[in-house]
Image (cartoon, rainbow, N blue to C red; front, side, top):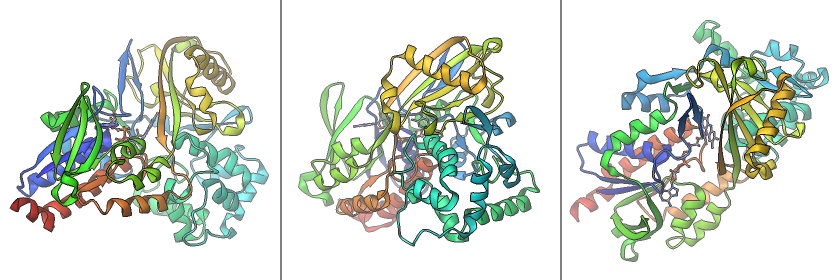
Length: 483
Ligand SMILES: Cc1cc2nc3c(=O)[nH]c(=O)nc-3n(C[C@H](O)[C@H](O)[C@H](O)COP(=O)(O)OP(=O)(O)OC[C@H]3O[C@@H](n4cnc5c(N)ncnc54)[C@H](O)[C@@H]3O)c2cc1C
């Protein structure tokens, strides 16, 4: 059995690792290739180490409240290198109306918090009587929020949450695709307030009142990384996949062998400018949607329009370091998010050196600032000096003083994060329908069923299970074995 995985980001590496595990467990031979376009693997995951700072270009960590990434670390034997975020990082802030407000961790502290006006807080009490989303209707995050929680909660709470995760616009994003858990809470309990109270009771029962994570209003679990940064996970996968990995291979197209999918596929790619080809019984595409579109154009033109309809938000990440006594403030927490209505292109500021130890030299502090997003796309390509000024202005407004920057690093992601707009679920169904005509072709990556690392590693397991069913346990394998 010859299987090619296209793309060596976390989705491609994890799916390759999981598929190989399943073949090994069943004692089946597998010729595995992972083709990665760049000179390095990891995709969005990259840790830059310079002048004593450890700067994450992409993800800062993953939440340990879900098992898939933790299980992957355990299976890779790197569980012992995991680094949970500090207790201090539980303190999260939102910048609103000229000041930082701590994100409340319990319903009681929520109703005491001045983050929303008294009217805004009272409006939330009415949530229990708000009409629920009609079954099967795809509703936007903003519409859902206005109906259930009121306009102020959308502008000050949901909007920064959407910016912080997707860098997107809540008026365009599908609630069910972006936040399936929230949609489920409404479906199960008829109200978010009731669902959160039920969750709080359950967590109290399970953890005796000392819940992990940010409480009912916060994320489920503790943000977790490695002492060496997130690249540790990529290195471990790279080591385990060994010679199966081929870098600098830009896949250009995938076509059925001899025009018949039943015969397998031919994967065409450019390696250092030279065109090459490889045959495969099965292929997993783990590249961004716009790349999958290019690769599938010849084989299934109808799927291209569907893939092209998944837009990406641009984000620039600006790392700024300060000598501790010249920092703009104490930076005692996780950092803050900024609602769009505040009129800045800064989406948020993460106080990296307070979240994980070892991210800055001993007498320095380090911030990672996200700029741009779908609604402020102009900002991502601003010159670095201008970006530093924009971020420094924001930090000064939030923290009260202007810091003196002593370290700067900037990474631009023109297509950082896929956005699940209204209609995303139907689009996925249509893509799957089209691809069903090509047995042995699988699609994964963050463009489809979740953008968090936990989503990518969960999908890797799901695809590996499907591959096992189709190619080891199913008839396809018998056919291949006979050939
Ligand atoms: C700034 C930022 C911060 C984030 N923070 C977090 C966070 O804190 N926590 C979290 O859980 N998630 C976070 N995310 C999301 C998470 O990092 C991504 O969803 C995840 O890393 C995507 O992995 P992937 O493998 O699906 O895609 P990618 O990482 O994009 O990998 C795709 C790979 O395919 C390769 N490729 C592309 N075209 C071809 C081709 N033609 N041939 C061969 N190879 C090709 C690319 O070079 C790349 O290596 C963040 C993302 C960004 C951008």
